[in-house]
Each structure stands twice: as C-alpha cells, then as structure tokens.
Image (cartoon, rainbow, N blue to C red; front, side, top):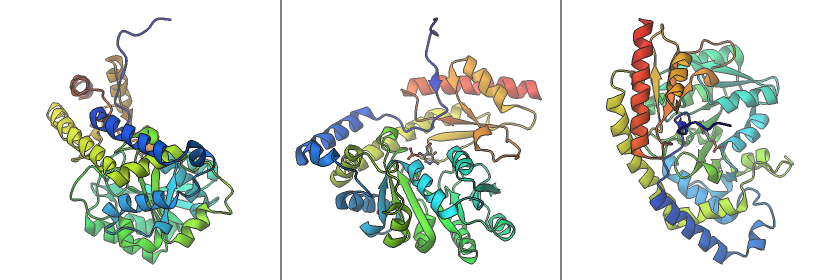
Length: 374
Ligand SMILES: Cc1ncc(COP(=O)(O)O)c(C=O)c1O
C-alpha cells in the first residue's frame, strides 16, 4: 500500500483547537484529584444515572453562566454528549408520525434520527439571524410541529446568530403554538456579549443543551441538559425509559465536574477563545476575495459561492491539494435545494502555520473555480 506524502489537513470538522499547554495540565490535575477522592470501584462500579448531586450542581454552574442564573440541580441532567440528549428527547417529545421544526440547514444527526424515529423534519427559512419567526409561524399553522430544534448562537453551518429581539419573537410563536424548544447552545461559550439563550426567556418549554465538545474537548462526551422542570426531565430520562446508552461515563463526568469546580474548565475555555482570536486574524484576510460569513468565537467559516459555481467541485479541488472541507449537502432536508457553499473548520488544524497554509489553498482553489464559472 502506498502512503500519501503528507496527511490530509482536516478542516471539515468544527473541533476547538488543542490548547495542550493549558488543557493537559488541567485535565491531568482533575483526573488525579478524582482518582484520589474516590476509589475506582466506587466510581465506575455503577452507572452515573442522571449525574451525581455534585455533577448536577456543576452542570448548573456552567449552564448558569448562559442562562443568567443557576438552575436548580434537579433540572440538570448529565448526558454522554449532546447527541445522546437528542436521542432521548426526539423520541419522547416528537415521536413517530409527528413533525419537528428545524432550521432550513440543520445539524445532520437530526436527519438521521428523523429516519430512525419516524418523525418528519420540516425546515424553517433562515436569514442572517437564523430562523425567521413569520416562517416558523406559517409552519406551525400548516404542520403543527411538536417541537423546534435550533441553534440561536453560531448556527451550524451558517454562523447566523439571533439578536435578543429575534429570540423573543421565536418565544412568542412557540408559546402561541405550544411548541417545545430544543435549544443547542454548544457554540455559545467562546463569543462574548451574547444575548441570553431562548431557554432563559421561555424556561417552561425549553430543553437547554450545553455540550463541552466545542469548547473543552470533543472526546470527553459530556453535555449538560437543563429541563423545564425536574419532573419533566425525569419523565424523559428516568426511570421508566429503560435506556442507559445516554448516560455519561463516570470518569468523564467526574473529571468534568472537577474541572468546573476548580475553574480548570474556565481556564481551558479562555485559552481556546484566545487561540481562536488569532486564528480569525489569520483566516479572514486570506478569504477576503470570497463571500464568507463568520463571527468572533466561531469555530468555522461559511463560504458562499456564486450560483454558477459548484461547491462539490471546489471541495474536490481543495482535497486534491491536501485539505478536507465540507459542503452544504449533509445539512439539507430531503427534497430541498442544496446551496452552493463550503464550511471550513478553523479550530482543528494542528498549528497556526498549518491553518494558514490550508486557508491559502482554499482561497486559491476558490478563485480558480469561481473565475472558471464566470
Ligand atoms: C450543532 C451541534 N450539536 C452538537 C454537536 C456535538 O454533539 P456531542 O456533544 O454529542 O459531541 C455538534 C458537533 O459537531 C454540533 O455541531
């Protein structure tokens, strides 16, 4: 078997940069404390269920930064990542034969789960602030969705972010049509001066999800979910549901709790935010000839192409040069038109130099393809 000269530079993912100097110190120290505080048998001898009291309090602290006040620990459920939370919620809150409202370009695992659970995802038109309230209202009238899944902050893939007014308008529609809101706030810890989550404005109908994958580490597989109430959370997760796949691995939950309690999580997030400032400074000027959108703190950039150019052709040309980027295809609902755009993750490159080289390749291939399509 022949090996390619240099490995592919991965820019199709939205992982945060590895701030190893800070991360390794904090993670090691948290792991050591956990192992000295608890015996291994005590820790991994049983499931973590919805999280220990300490885990749920830590989840309350971390989500409280965004929600504006610390939610009661009884409302907090620790899960094995955001996708596990969706798996439980979409089955329970939407269910077979019903409709889930989603952004017109939505996080691809939702489409996979729609097929598995037999519900229908219906896209709501978006503008530069994400879901348009009037379009959501029209969908509520025509299709009576049970719930809305959305990212009001740094929408994936477009980076659209809602103003406070837009969030309030979405809440008004949700209240009028009795919609449950599944709010995925996973990209919200890096930008500063954000409006509050929708879940803070309508806690009675919101399921707030804050995973650590985009700020601390994707491999920790931890997400904190805040349910509208302790009783509603228990109805979806415990005890009658008879599923344990969604529960956090005890060691990871314990390390996460320890890092939140000691401030280690905050130090890692601050370091990631700082590194992302530099990465944006590298990438934005290099992409100045493209029609790109991104925001401070975003882990990715969305580059729109003119109608006459094909994103798949561009992604293939970039790949030949050793860089992997994503197109809009996986985000598109069945039967809808695929916008010509590529998504480039700027956190995953191993170094700033690698990021710069890869971005130059993307910009050059973009110019070639767009000029040829004119
Ligand atoms: C919108 C969104 N939600 C959630 C996740 C990650 O989920 P998990 O917490 O299960 O790793 C991602 C990662 O790509 C994402 O883009």
